[in-house]
Length: 383
Image (cartoon, rainbow, N blue to C red; front, side, top):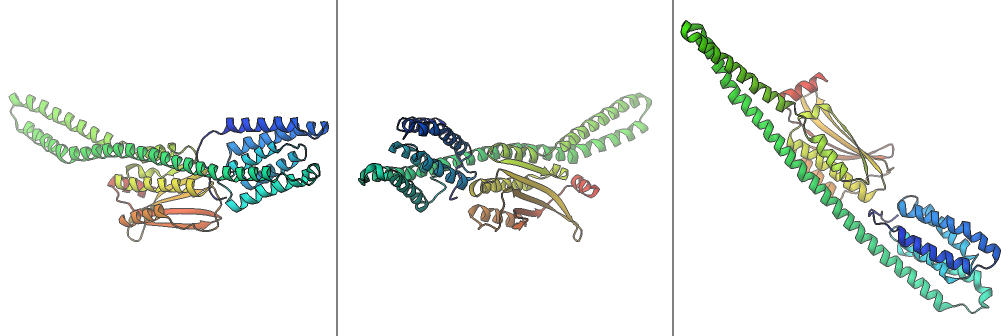
């Protein structure tokens, strides 16, 4: 298969119209009454095959093409009309992106040759070369035009996909920036206002113990107010720190922008408080893996596993993310610009990007150091 069809354009109406036209012509020019009856199930089989090819254009391409080729040959034995070559034109359109020119020329030439062999006696040796050349030229020209259309639609689809991913990333970055600001604000409240309120409460408590009976009641009230205010500040800080990070939500937004590929995510609970820089690295990794899977494979599912690994020798932590799709692979593919860019991004954060083959599965993996806060260290150690 040369390339996959990624667009979602519906060819149902045009295909049904073409099938109906050639079926009526074939039935009208049937060789005999028995051939007329045999054509009915044969045409229905062709319709079912066309429906499958439209709905699943990238599945079992070789098998579908051989079956379609065989059905066309069988139909030519039951009718004498050259309109049966409409099926050959549909054949070139359906498989235009999957077969290279030489293979398509072989298919077209084989059909024309078989038709000539079946009708040679009827023509009494006068082969209608002009008719055959016109049909052959029209089939090959249709292959060329259809191929260009599919390539253009694939580019348009990829542009739309990139736009959706860009919009999702922009939304994610805005949300992550807002959360980062909330976390920064909570730290400032804790480090400045919280400390000063604590000092104020201690001084008020000391003053209350040394005060006269006339001012003791007022100082007691002030001390209670300072305690209430300090408790409220602590509650605000705690609530802000208990907010889960947007990493899971961000990745789900990216996955939703790719309905053609089923994405599964396993995200470690310890990454709740992952910082914005690390989260962005993971988002870019997932986007690149989705894009590469769509472009270069026929996979329908991809699984992401994101976890934290502790290194005992230097008491540091690594973020480890892997991506595995459900298409069998036998060799590590050549790295294009996207993977090279991902490798460069990992180098900037002192991480690395690797690829390996295990049990006929391509495993894409990134690792990079994790800058953790105290609460995250506690969660990792506890696990």
